[in-house]
Amino acid sequence: MPGPRRYDYLITGGAGFIGSHLCEFLLSKGNSVLVLDDLSTGSLSNLDECSDNPSFRFVVGSVLDESLTRGLVHQCNKVIHLAAAVGVENIIQRPVETIETNVKGTENILLAASGDNTPVFIASTSEVYGKSENIPFREDGDIVLGATSRSRWSYACSKAIDEFLALAYWKDKGLPVIIGRLFNTVGPRQSGRYGMVLPRFIEQALSGKPITVFGDGEQTRSFSLVYEVVDAIVALVENPEAIGKVVNIGSTQEISIGDLAEKVKEITDSISEIRFISYEEAYPDDFEDMRRRAPDVSLLQSLTGSFPEADIEAIIRDILK
Ligand code: UDP
Image (cartoon, rainbow, N blue to C red; front, side, top):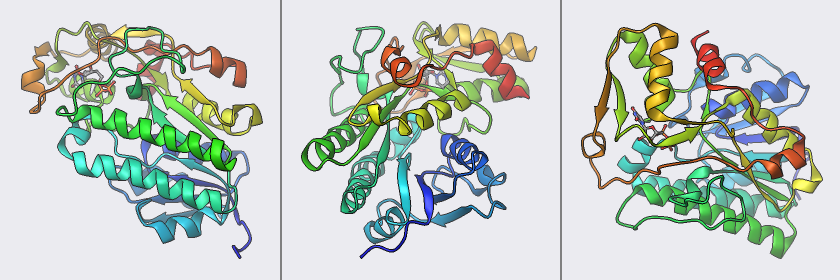
């Protein structure tokens, strides 16, 4: 028999960029939080604001460890599963790790949760829409992925499998699951180390190095501030209507990467030049980018009453603070 549940939430990947903001938010609302993180891309310093809180506990370990995962899930009322391989560069360099962490890790969480029917939020990604041109992306729209010889798509594919598996647990076993497809999320503490564009541009601009725009810079993304994403995740987790659903979490404000570089340069008052770099030069592998990415947020709005709205200039200024 499992023991008593001692924590309100288990956050896998809680030492990561989004996870650590989520922990801070949940603790500030009086919840108790248990974090599991292998510190592969996350770091303990992200949790500096949490570590002294008596309602907080950190466990270093991997979601790939089945018995550890099972033991921790059974101590918590709800699971928010964020642990995953992240960052396009990281994913291209470590394809085996990406697929195994994303698929096996999520399988372990769902299996453990189904043991005592623990509700699970699964963090998926806008990457699953792939090259679809049906902008804005709706959750029930088709997904369009590239060839398996291009490692980038293994990330989208592994996350799509996570979604299928989570929905199968819901349909087959009645496990309460919610899937959030996170679009580009940015904010304080995000590292540019794994390729993410905005922290990288800001670092480049502040150090006077060239701001590196890949391709023609006409590709677009929609950036949300991490606090708004955290609000959306918690609002979904608290809403029984969200169970069994796949929900976009992102901003509707699309911006081209070239314009983003200009804005960063302007707001930081940087002397950096904006340098265009071909994809062949930027990525060693046979690489494919997506031209546009923007969510339809009507489902998020109907379930939570809001969606991320901070504009990109406010976001850049917030990060600089
Ligand atoms: N990008 C760029 N310069 C960089 C890093 C990224 O121009 O130094 C581009 C990248 O090719 C993509 C966009 O910025 O078109 C967003 O990249 P990121 O890796 O942040 O996330 P993605 O949305 O591709 O997952």
